[in-house]
Length: 472
Image 1 (cartoon, one colour):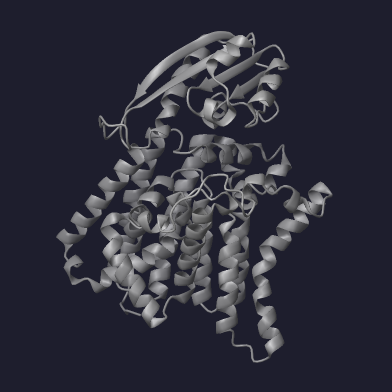
Image 2 (cartoon, rainbow, N blue to C red; image 1 turned 135 degrees about the vertical axis):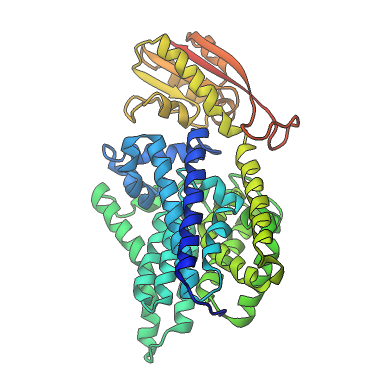
């Protein structure tokens, strides 16, 4: 590896970077009340409700590790949970710097911007998505591994499956790594060594069996659209994730990344990190290509290995002499920040929270007694502080939903939008009037970005959305 000293000036630089991104993160939490996808809001709700509904602590889709860790900050509200994610992201960056030092890389402080200015990582570093917990656990495990405590590292890796399904793939890859690098001279001990990688799943399995009385609870709770050949979210070309590398790595960091990856593969160094990145990259490429396990082709999935991506880019950065000047650094990171801001600000779905807040503010001024809340977006429930007990549950089946709405009790409030509601539940505003619900509020919105206001219909362009409140 490239060797260097780590003077106090390097520590000051690290904390300066962390302070800058901490400030940016607070601004993002204030400006963007929700997230770019529904998953973030629902994961927050599951964590918030887990104290009264222990099922959320063992559910497959609810992600046990995330739900457990977020169960405390979620009690203080959505914004508090988002700030907690910011804290986790900053700790992840700090741990990544520590890993760079452990590997004796030059400029370890640069790992912070190389991590947090990855567009997909920047998008998630204040959202309540599960990739952030995964990334933190992974970088800590790799640090522990390179400190010589391989068994503890394997136990940490085993916990990844409790944060996201990708943990299973990383666990298998690390099993191969452990078999190849084990110093055990006896064959049977060498073969048993990777069993430490099953620790987390065993604990999860036992906890689920005790809590539910069903020894096969995890199998029975496995989502139907996660089956091997489900194709639930479609598919795409085999090179889809290669095309997404500018969002995964950062467009201005691509030369550094490819240079670093080539160097590491040739030298066989940082094998624990490289094998983790390659495993996830190849697995998601194949799954989305074949439509396996409901893979959706999102770039955020690779945020799970974002610290590794940053380390690889740092190796390449240190090889490029043209990037060693202060001006070159500032220009590179400045462009990277603009790309990230455009990526985040351009997500049109994120703007729906403004329209939801407006409709909720109208309801605050015109209150009605609510016995049941049916909503099309998770943020609607968050905004109205609904509980797990008083929410009306719908499915993807339109006919089932129509029947369910017919039997809802008096005092049922429908909080609906014009896109997610019809798409996910097959119901539009006209259906509610036909069922006898009374319209309280209806408004169409043109939602623009805070930073970029572009005229086109693509990323960054305006979003036309409508919000409806119906009641009976």
